[in-house]
Length: 305
Image 1 (cartoon, rainbow, N blue to C red):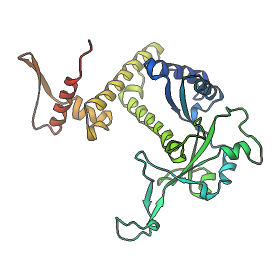
Image 2 (cartoon, rainbow, N blue to C red):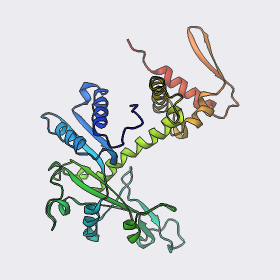
Image 3 (cartoon, one colour):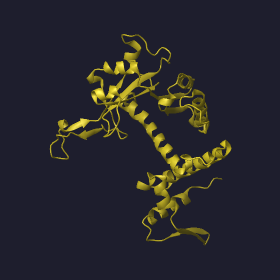
Image 4 (cartoon, helix red, strand yellow):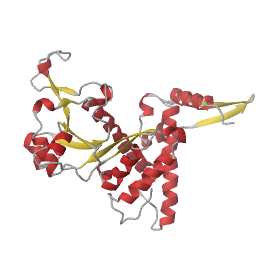
């Protein structure tokens, strides 16, 4: 959505409009069970209240996961979390995130637990913020909203706040309306955290968009920039579907610059004959086999009737 340059990052009206457009873009049959994620810019009363309203409708299941600011009340709550309450965080495959300790033994396949360090942990802060010594500090927010914190070892060169530098952990927070009574693995803190971090894919899409034209607008005219935005978004969508439907391995995860060189700008000819279309490409091209496979997959897609 193209907005004026004076628009703020926490403009709730824009967030509500974008939320409505995103849901409207889905087929009606898929709108009854949704998970909606956004980063810390969406942590406004108006947006969370609207998400709570959507979740309260009869016959609908809407789970939201929204980034949250690390403020003074959250810092105080984190300081009161006992060490055993921090659960080990997991990656997208359900594996605990670990790295080898600096003083680990020489065996690279060692099974000794003391040779590994857990890199991230998760804890819930809802009880401390709702029922702590200072009373309910979340009165203005929906009762169904729960607050979680995640701490992780920072990567080399990462800049930490004074609060984070004190203990060496980097913290990020988010809120969700997933009921505390949720059973099974979905109700565990580690999996709630993993579900929220799926939102990181949005950052990848934004980076891809900048490489397909969103990084620079060609004019001071709002109308021209809007047309440019539409063209750039079409390019992002086409690249996403290309990688999803036709490509494998490294090409399925490649950035636009790599795809331009290996796929989009590759010299080839489309030959018609015998009521068939054949793709001809030089056998010496390093990615010729991948291109032919992609072409065959696209050709196999049924034509709409």
